[in-house]
Image 1 (tube, helix red, strand yellow):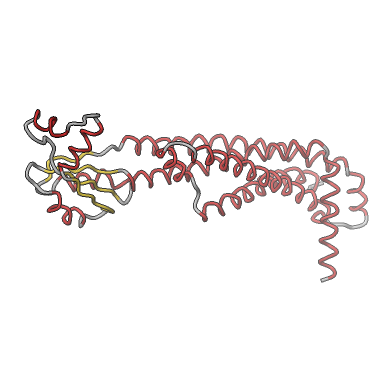
Image 2 (cartoon, rainbow, N blue to C red; image 1 turned 30 degrees about the vertical axis):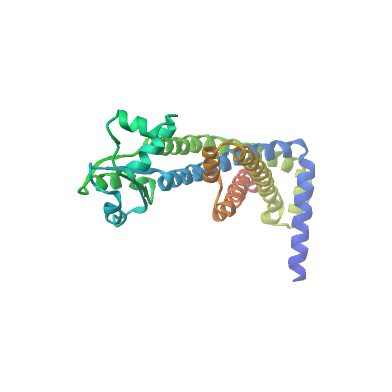
Length: 300
């Protein structure tokens, strides 16, 4: 136990000493990693949020099922409710639909409008909600086959656009993150190499007294990991602050914007995975960069 504490104390002191001697190069490495992880975290969060919006649109997106003239909505309601992938069915009588339409048009005399058209021109309808956005088109086809159904209408443009945006964002993010990862590794490699060169006399003394390459260069590797962890913490703070700011703005807007705000909230699992993913990527980039830096010196 005492030996472990002694070794840990040595690694901690040497790592902190190396970071102290890094100077402004430390900030260059940390800031580069921060930019990388901020974009990575933002793209990952955006991907989750777009998927959440897709699911939310799938749950909220209504399929309007218009019935044939003379068919009562209450008669078909249990039949439609039994169709797979149907979450909820709401019956709307033609009288209620006509009253709502006339009100929306700003006409106060409902009876007069009805008389001018020789009666209510509408038909009963059912408003159906699907279990998932991917099921909307299939469900609409199935509902159209039910006897007594005249037409089925749904709006899938928003869902399709969001899906395309999510797909495109994934590819763009992958390219940008790949380039920034290489950049961050290069900056960390350069920083660690400068620190190693600044301490080359100390390293030579350690080699003369029999210290192994592992104990000589492990503190430098830990410095690279420290750059990654620091960048991850800063990026997480920036992402969290931005998320809170956007949510606060959206919550002050209209109902539809608040609906979007609800879709932008991360689940508890996602809120836990995000910082872990940032720490994992940051540590990996720092580790790879520091290994590249000490490889040449350790091989001598």
